Image 1 (cartoon, rainbow, N blue to C red):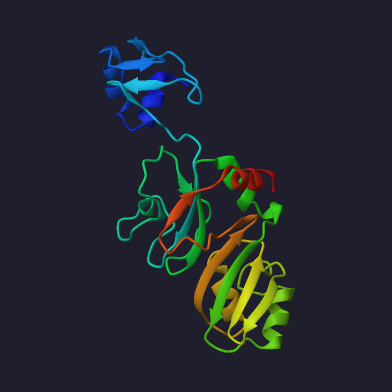
Image 2: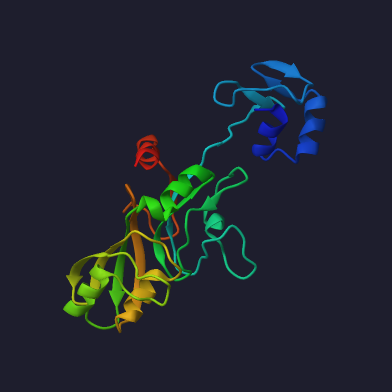
Length: 232
């Protein structure tokens, strides 16, 4: 990676500004000052300092957020707080939420800058399981369960894929789906004559919501969690 790009990722300044800093010989690589902004470094091995302060840059971002109600799954929004604004850490450019949770939906949301991983998790062909905790206004009847597990007409060209339903009480289920259509869970229940009053995603593929994370809290994924996502 070029040195000037690395400094930009570290939020030292714009590409133009970091070039100036480098040419002022304020940057060292492995203890040696340099004025060459286009030298290449290994960000995982080389030590880079600016004004003798060591830089630590997070290049590959994998964050688990317990998304709270009232926050939008977007990188920017003029009216509402975004999920990226929940992350009180300096992140490189290009981070985004993987898929969308409605503004009033809580739970597991992956934030990353890994486009390939996001594509694999969201591709309909992969049929990645997404598990939701769903509370409904009215009791969930047996015929509703049959409809959900058979595929529901929600007004699209095709029925939803068969879901898996696990009842925990008469108005609460764990619902497993393998798609991510617009407002899908709410539309599925509406098509069955019921209404979702609370919705929370608790898993996506092998990634489980951390029970220690309160709404609005986040953490970086462990190496093993990232490995499972990539190999899942």
